[in-house]
Length: 193
Image 1 (cartoon, helix red, strand yellow):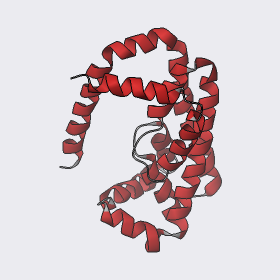
Image 2 (tube, helix red, strand yellow; image 1 turned 135 degrees about the horizontal axis):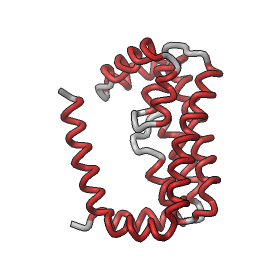
Image 3 (tube, helix red, strand yellow; image 1 turned 180 degrees about the horizontal axis):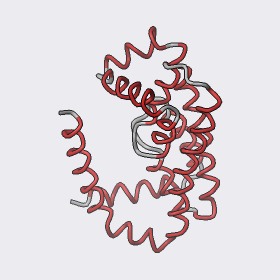
Image 4 (tube, rainbow, N blue to C red; image 1 turned 60 degrees about the vertical axis):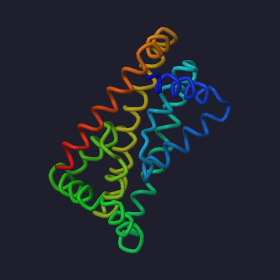
């Protein structure tokens, strides 16, 4: 079934759209607060579609992701009980916040770096950092470093791969898409035990 190759063509068209940088900035911002789709889904095709702009896109994603992280931090810091806690309860994320709190106690500031660089849901840790009243300057600096490393790595790989990578990706996109879907299902059942 060629579902992902059709999506890939559509995403590449969006990535070359004149307003794509605005979409990237908005996606990066809201992903740090509540959006479940990672920024890489938009950044990678944009960097692949316009390799000369890859560093610009990575910087844009980093800046707006950290600005969104500040909103997440403020929500946890100032609006936990009246706004955030009821939302967290309504979507069943209490256990994720509890795990985040435990990780903060165990690893301190390193948990922000790990969450900002890896596919771990960064938004959970931005809100939890505010809830636990983490020092703001280290939060910002660590977020800038982690998010910057991640986004510049993605943009760099796409720039380095160029058209050759785009052709290879188009060839294997359906296999990779179904593989990722399978891994997501396995991860869901593994972590919800």
